[in-house]
Image (cartoon, rainbow, N blue to C red; front, side, top):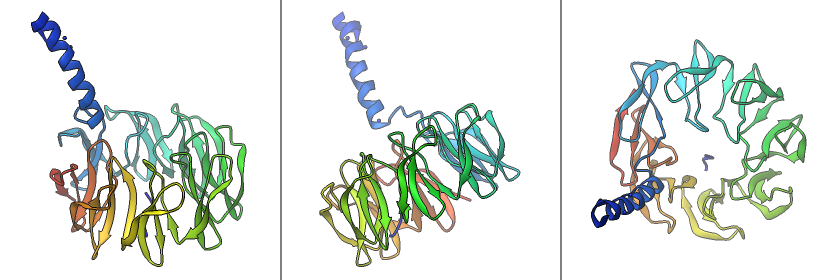
Length: 300
């Protein structure tokens, strides 16, 4: 996120019931009710993971941790990062100075100031050589090479030349790029499709992206037109129909019509992921659901 800015029951009995149950479970998965996601939490200065119902499923034992993606999560122990599976077992031993979650089978890792990419076995696929890098999407990952940002493919080949002052991830087939002092958007061929005109730009989700102009944040469509007027102090990307916004120094969430869905009340907050969003109060992190109800009360 860039800030500035979810079995036919007994033959007509069993068969009918089973059919209904199948439909219910499908809808439930869509809504995240049976989510398999795990979420990092801190207790007694260590980090573990809870499930969507708020049950602790991986005991706090890591110095730091990030989100699970592609079945693995980056965690640190003794100042080195590795990757664990959903049981908490290391599948890539701690050895990196930096690590981000996996995306499309690759993860950004760092040795000192140089960043590269590994596969899920921990093998280096792209040698650490970049001053900056981010997760890939649509087979393209933004990297900072020499003085500018470009995009590489999974082999490490520069697919979109390094020509931008900043670059974000592809989402909905578009990526925010900075040219000079303003952000616009390119397509997967590197062609500018929304002219640089914003002071900040986020990722497109469901056809909308955060964009800032004149010190205020709103949301644009793929034509570059504001569909939610710039009115927020800061804002994040839409995720699962809700977007993080700052109003009067407090964070809450709005829906796709720009209406407040969860009242601004948090010191900081993050994006929704399979039904939960991280929030902070007084330096303590908790998780709320889409109704703003705490699933995990803020802890240290």
